[in-house]
Length: 606
Image 1 (cartoon, rainbow, N blue to C red):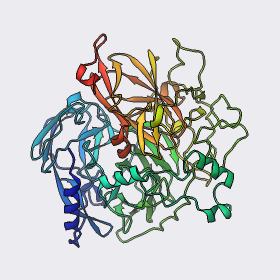
Image 2 (cartoon, helix red, strand yellow):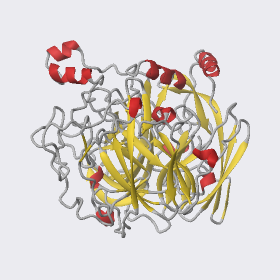
Image 3 (spheres, helix red, strand yellow):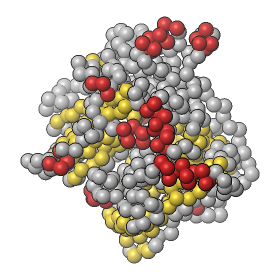
Image 4 (cartoon, rainbow, N blue to C red):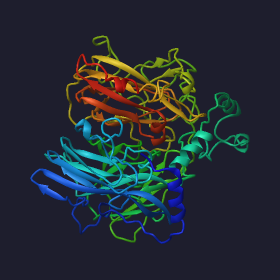
């Protein structure tokens, strides 16, 4: 189901002879005052009442990124692909015409739909064969900002993704004058198979920010004794991202940082920006110097507005913000979490205007807190380790908010819905050779901005800031399952509970049950975990106001929990959205069966 290495190398060599190939910018990425206030989506092939039909063509196209040409997997000839636009209550028909010499697929990220329309080869459909057409049909029963992408091998890394927007049937609960869509992504000119080989053979292949002896002698970063502690555990505190700017070109709406993407507005407009992180391996820290960002949507769902200066957007997450720019240019700055590069764009009232590009910040470093080491008493209210702030730890005013509910009395044997998990000592199971470490203590870190953020006076969005726009009763869970996110960075192995998908493929679920899913991150990496087909309700302490999410980032040594209304039959993918982690085994199938049903033998034996 993937392009073989020889074909990739041969086609890439041919492309090296080409020059001057431009990058077609999708129409939706042009924001002009003379155009409608919403970016133009792809014109439907047909619209009949509430039935909306689109045709998409998947092909291989030579495109230039940052002045160098690569062989992209495109949708209708562009990276990103076209903007698909619907209104809540529509019915969608989307025909995929596969012109590739390999199978492809399209997954509709965050969309609730029939199981056989979800688009995961080998899980709920066979894939779209080379030179064939497949028709997706599903109802649109939600609103918000989403995206779509391939679930076949490394096509997503090569450009197979695009934005999808659903307008609410009753209109948005906030006012704005202009809408802009910003898709963040990453591109490598290397064969993605070669990238994976490099990581398997030498996991720090792309980490050129490791601490040096000269740095230690100068007193930069950590002390020598701390450095030796990390070495004994065969870990590196600068292992923030597996893949860095050493190979990645960071893109904003398909444009490399120089000159970057350009969007236009009229002074005085309230601008609604829909941010989508369509990266294969990059977390971004986003801010617009001089403009406060009022967050109004997360994972496509309205939230109580919260104003910040910066937010971290994990892979596959979406955030919508409202800004009120003045009569000047602004830089939209999306810095990679490991500080090895950035994507950028310019918002301005007139073409030709520019703004200062912010100075890149120093590389962040993981701390002993990220390792979950218990160097003192743990505050059972979920705050920091008493008296043991570690280098680089500054939560900058992000102590646990006073209105966040902590665990109280047990409710049917489980804590009340919407409350935070208690700090917990890691029990004996080390999960085998597929797991390099087990934290001493895991705890909620939802109130922390994350490694490399905080301490500079900026207000940073944290998960405990997110409250559902409307309060809803939250049914108590019937049972709880605990999954450990496991890995061995030295050997570049990724798994769940120490086992890959091939070793342990299924998470059994029962239709109609209310499930609490608790995830524990035993690794030093951030993992953006995504469940297909059903919402996850993030238990961030806000009880009946906890937000719905389709993707959630689990920090190192973190314990977080989500509530799931198990209301969709079938096999649904559940995985880390770091593409290379998923491919190597941090993947499961949530198998939803009617009460009393048994797992099909062909699935149970995978």
